[in-house]
Length: 290
Image (cartoon, rainbow, N blue to C red; front, side, top):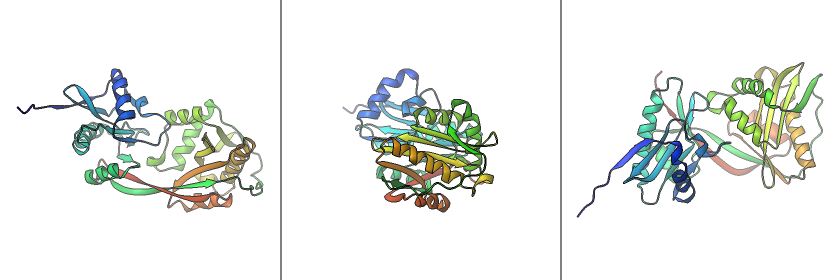
């Protein structure tokens, strides 16, 4: 006798947290976005779709928009018993339909860290648009500090700075790389070192660095476009490296776009070197032709 089973796709609920935690931590196929927030923190946001078979959770896909125009795939997980391709197709169809009902959302995006996930994205119509490269600085002597702009002040970032930090972020990056205010707050609360550059009571740049087991990671660096070229980014990086050195850091890492030659040139001045790690960025245009 053949027992027919039915796969049901539905939105995740807060009470699904325990089942989701088991799926994420113990099952075979798990993609997690490189994010300040763990994937289950997105429960309560949409799209966050689940697939169930005979009442058992077999797969999950979360891609809530943040920032408003970009829906990063925060989580895709499928169990051993599930057909990964079938689970992805069912969950993506549901998530895609929900994203189309969100008029501000322009793209879905993902950083595939596993070949099997890259293959799913290829089959679905996602296309590679950027590549991210990793660099590392290992206990080298620092170049001399450059003379900053007169009246430029570097100081620790505070929670009250975040709305102005968000404005710098929006002005400095294209939408796919922008961080929302909520995301910046998560980053700030996890930071080892967070600094703002202030010129005549105006914030003109910032950096946020997170701790690692060997030292730190420069997670975010931005300077207002009209203030670039005045050594503000150099001052921010020099200051954070000095602080990490005082803390005994053995290694400081950073990632940047492969085509961002200006950013790479800045890091090379300090002795950062390529690690050989490289990751593709995939995007899906939700409204092609518009």
